[in-house]
Image (cartoon, rainbow over all chains, first blue to last red; front, side, top):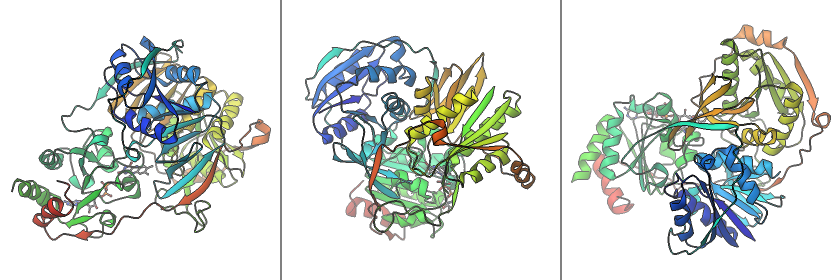
Length: 311
Length: 249
Ligand SMILES: Cc1cc2nc3c(=O)[nH]c(=O)nc-3n(C[C@H](O)[C@H](O)[C@H](O)COP(=O)(O)OP(=O)(O)OC[C@H]3O[C@@H](n4cnc5c(N)ncnc54)[C@H](O)[C@@H]3O)c2cc1C
């Protein structure tokens, strides 16, 4: 039994989410190979070969793999799929975009967003915004899987000694083209990798007011997140959204400020180790999942907390 | 350009789903059902493209039991020209849905197919991508902007790091994210008008599609409940608890 993990990267560095996907592949058992498809992506292939437990790295390098376009990446994965029973990727926006295309080309179901492995054909995944935990068994010969990164501890990025093998490139499908990217720049930790997250909701009221949230985040060395309402209102960029249809996070500490706690938001953060809620409405549902709840006005309590942390 | 939009009847987003007591399935008895919210956004986008004079016809397709007629009527009340129900009482998993949609698309020959990025019941986030694969079409997933541009389509996509823009050839599949648009409210006169719009019914057999489920649900369980927490009276207590009790800062 061998698994292929499709690596995610920016042609320079391996995205740490890949280490969680490799961990899930190892939980299934058997050998694990990694596919690095990119453009000028040798450093990524070399890094993937260093990952603990990786048998070998298949490396396909061509201009049309530079931006992980699904139309080009999926046929490549399919062309390499033959020896593999499991094909996995992290459930990032890249994995979610590419893997169902792989699955359909192989005439297989995809098992999305797994949080556990029962056996080589049976997996656990949340459905209905995490309000139901499903155990599903696949009848397909190949299992195409995306992995919820928060559910699998990453394997070590070093200590491995996999071989790097060149993989034959497939042609450019010529269906799609990368035009550009507007990436959110921040010196704060990445949301899905952060130890501490401070999130703001509609209660924060404006983009300027988000400075209150950022001040607390900076004091704690935390990442900044948000509810859908805060993103929709334009207080913060889309990639800050935590929830059922945004990012799923599970930090050691999640501080929800001015967030009511809708099921869609809870779906993205309720596996955090410790949850703090600051909300002026003592009936807010967020208090139902909070370890520590503080009823009060965020514009008073959050600056006070920044001050208290100095003591 | 003809636009086809896929709409799923799903649990209403305000309802909290629960597993059945015996763990065999999700308990959907007497649960309020609505159009999947992401599909509403897809419908809105189709209508806006048509209102801008860039679509000759908009068609909504739903797959499922008879009650999906209501979902299609909602799409038509929003403004879609006609509906197609592929009626079945079988469980339709994403790959099967993609195959059914492909069969409908081969009949209807649209140039653009819009779907929601994910249904809020099974949270699979697969059908649009699978459909694009089966058709050999490009895909613009998680779209927050769609623009026709010199014979193709420019799609802005919500990705983990921000926004990505891709250019797709037509025909293409696009899946909507939350920020693509804000769906309109349906007005009463339009609900009346929608009742007169054509709604055709097809069956899975007529389309010749194998919809056998590939995944079997072995168990539906409650997620682990969180231990109840406490309310703290002030910030000083909160910081003290985080430092000395939870030890997370
Ligand atoms: C298809 C779909 C997908 C969705 N996906 C997501 C998702 O992924 N993530 C997500 O977050 N949501 C999602 N939602 C939206 C979700 O249903 C809620 O609408 C949203 O989470 C509400 O955000 P909020 O808590 O910031 O706003 P509100 O519910 O408006 O809550 C604001 C809170 O702030 C408090 N407040 C106001 N002023 C102050 C103050 N001065 N001090 C202290 N507290 C204050 C209020 O008491 C209130 O509790 C989705 C919805 C749909 C339909």
